[in-house]
Amino acid sequence: MGSISQTLRRTAIIPAVRAPWLRYGGLASLLAITALSSYNAVTTDRFAWDLSISRWVQQVTVGESLEEALFYMGVLGLGGVAMTLAFLWLWLKGHRVDGVLLLLALAPNGAVFFLRDLFDRPRPSLDLVNVIGGAQGASYPSGHGFMVVFLYGFLFYLLTKYTDSRRVLSIVLGLIVLYVPFAGLWLINHGRHWPSDVVGGYMYGGLALLLWVQLHRLARAWEARHPGFFTMRTIRRLAERIGLPRGA
Image (cartoon, rainbow, N blue to C red; front, side, top):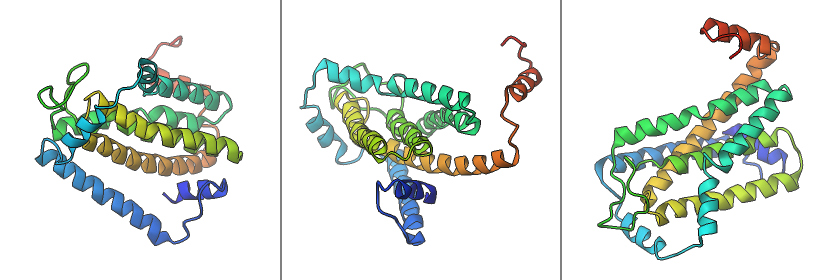
């Protein structure tokens, strides 16, 4: 968590958080709120305010163009393209650890499916709200909400490592800050998730982001001690060990 605040402080986007207890207190609060939210997801089908907020959000209609833009900015759309391009750039520039961690960022998304099956909260139903496309399995936490915070957050974190331009970083951060709530409202508007599912996805995404930032710091330190590990020769050796053909 300290790494994120140090990075943003270096680029002068946010003021410094000098007191360590504030950083650790913030992390402890996020863990506690996420745990409480998860407990309520297990014990209730929805929060008391989920239905009223969902019906209010569904009164708003947006154009098809905006709906498509919000959809394709998800993991399989713009997010996937941004991740692929960033990985290729990092790998070709020799920033192998950064590229590998970015590629492995897809792994936590699998944990969301596990959590949803574990909590088994039902999605919004047609007898309560308008549901576009029909219900799709369990509901809490929102996988889309998780990934927009985690993936875009980690992409922004990596961006801070390769540019000191306050303008570029401010624009990208502003776009992310605007998109994240709009994506959540879109999920609620289409009846895909309850508001508490979306918020839960945001919180789990934030925790995963903090974990990935710490893993990045450890991986960078490990790479400094093993500078020749992430090479194509090593990749070929690993491929041979797991039985992949040479041309794979």
